[in-house]
Each structure stands twice: as C-alpha cells, then as structure tokens.
Length: 256
Image (cartoon, rainbow, N blue to C red; front, side, top):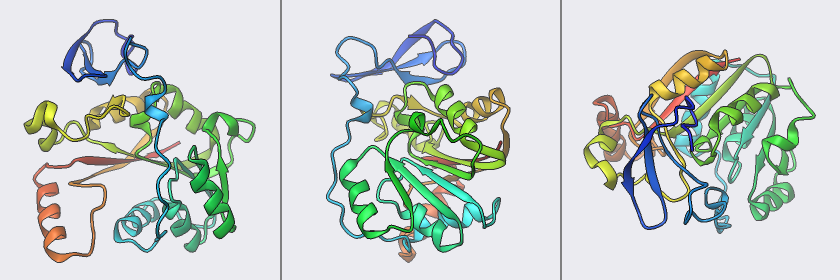
C-alpha cells in the first residue's frame, strides 16, 4: 500500500501488534495501517460495538468547548453536518445555538434512538458517499475522531469539500501523533489501536488541506479530547500539559 497522504511507495514498519502494524512513509513521515494487508481484520476500522447509549448531554463542558471553537469562525443561521455524530451531542449543541443540523453515523441503534427522542435534527444511518446527491449545501461540517478510521483520508476530505457550501467551515479533530506524549510513549501510546488506520501530525493535516485547496483558519491542541471537564484539578493539570506540548488530540479549522 502506498502512503495515503503522498502516494510514495516506500514505507517501513514503525511498530507491530498481533493483528496490525503501523507503517511510516519514507517520503513524508506519515504513519498509517495497511488495512489491505493479510491478517488485518476485515472492516476493523468500521466495526464499532453498538454502545449502551446512556445519557445524552450536549451541555458537557468538552462539547460546549467544541461549540465555542466553532462559533469563533462560523455564526448561525446556517446548515451544519456532524459526520460520525456518535451520540449526537455536538449536533444538538449547535442546534441550540441556531444552526439547522444533521448528523450521520454508522451505528444504527444510536441513530434510531436519536431519531425517536431528538427529532429536531436530521439523523441518518449513512455515510458521506450517500450524501453525494446534495452537494454544496452545508455551512459547517464537523469530523470529531473520524478521519483516523478512514483508509483514504484524502478522498474522504475531498467528499467533505463537495458537501460544503462556498466559504464553509470544516472542523477536524484527530489523535495527535506529533504530541509529546505520543513521542515519549512510542509504541505504548494508547491511540495506537486496531481501528485507527491513520496517525496525523499537524503538518499532515495542513498538507492535506493545502492539497485540496482549503485554507487553515486555526489549529488547537488538547491533552485529552474530553478537556475541559469542569473538575478544577483535572482541568488545571490537563490545561498545563496541553500548553507544554502534551497534546493528545489536535483540532484544525478549515475554510473551503
């Protein structure tokens, strides 16, 4: 498998586990999993267990942080699409701010629950490819912890661009393999997982955006995706770690 970012055909194994190996491109340094390799479980990057749904809380501090970040670059009214919406908390929080929202995910049980209990959102159990008949119609598109699961991130982001209206905001959040925690832990970093097939640094996201003609509006990093939690000592420690480069997740804001 060539590098999914730069298509260079020379890679080496950075680290291996019983069912998968993370390769590193000798051309650009991007790390990825060859999901077509013998022994890699078929569709492992999509095989999420249907979770117990539990409480759905768009008021959670880290969800509200995401909304505040979005509102720095886009204001309602407008149409927002949360891709890989999970329990739908980001879409619900954006709806409360005045956006007309849709959310898509592959977890049928969760989507059915959301359709029943939160009908103000257009919930669909589908993929981006199935939305191709409605191009240029969303003003905000969010992908929180989605791109690391997709074997062809370039095509996925190109599909997002097709769905975006001119000047739309695209928000991507992924684990940050360029952070100090990932560097110090090496193969022990907890985001090296069977269902993660891409491992992004900030430079990788910037390159991907530039190749697709998208403008970088800003980049933010956090020690953990659930920062903040409104627990004083946890937020104090995680905030300090993030400022010193221990950023386990990175969020990039793009303009189409």
